[in-house]
Image (cartoon, rainbow, N blue to C red; front, side, top):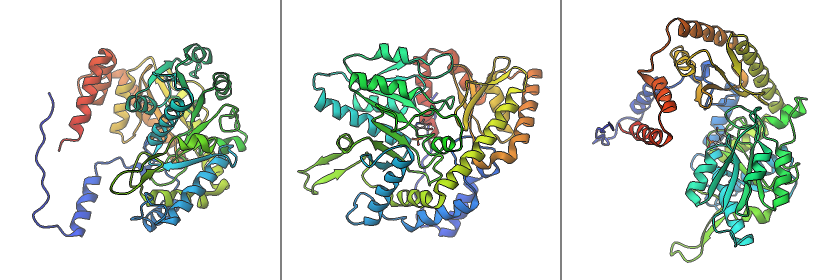
Length: 444
Ligand SMILES: Cc1ncc(COP(=O)(O)O)c(C=O)c1O
């Protein structure tokens, strides 16, 4: 049954700021202690020195608003230069343009909206525009289709967990306006066959968005280091747009992603303007109105401070750690990493054990791992400084596996129960349950 909520009101008299800050510190006690290296999701950390620098850069532009580049030319400069630097990292030339958004989701929302408006002009005969995308593509594409009135057609992956190009070919119809590939996709950390998808896009005269939200600031550097990274960026014919998150492996502050287009004409379909509002002519390049100057400034500061050598160093550290973790996991009888991950993101499973219950036992020991489905698996986004926890992770994992084998968890409580239950009930009912869980989370 849905939870009722309590009523919380503002205090009659403002509380001392020191007291408020102390209260916040104590509320924070229940959060993941990610600096101890046990969190493999949500946080990207390049060490204390960079962290403190980032906070300073962020604070310098704490109140500035990129809604008005005329009022804050500094932010205009930062944004244009971040886009230029990111385009260069991603094999783009001077024709590539784009914007900083608040995150990967907004970048993908913008890309879908851009192709929708492009198709409205260039292919007006299409009344029900379709996106064809691999099943592994980030849910934000589906969210965008839901928001903007498009249809998604999902194609399976091959036995190697990469997009099935033949299936994508078969799924394209006269209503298709864009294709999607990921570099890499979130669930398995693997790059789709972007070259082949580019050929399909060219053949059908449609866009191809490469979602490199996770990999945009790691794959190019791994490639330079000699890792076998297939071509995935603007250098591939047919790639018309990309997204790369500054706030993931870019190590910028939260609230910063780059969305990039192969040329200015395509980019302009992203914009919105209205000219007859009494408040004046209103024009904006992305979804949001007010745009925090702090995250844009911190993104610029990060690219400058990291430089190519910084990104090479941190990419290698994360990759070495990920590979050692994978080795340790693969050595546990019945356990294996799924597919052949291209970077420091991967998932693992076992057919011998309830993997969700295992995830929960690991959580009790302070580890944070995301849970995946089809098949049930645990997910790891590896940070550069997690090298020191490899042994502890593997020994805790082994201990939890042994415990699970001896005392298999009954699915009666906690998240394991939720995941277990969701895996067995029809998708329609699962949706209701999930929506109820979301609503309950925001009730005090
Ligand atoms: C491949 C990919 N695309 C998009 C996103 C969405 O990014 P955000 O959570 O910043 O909106 C993610 C998030 O993990 C991702 O892994």
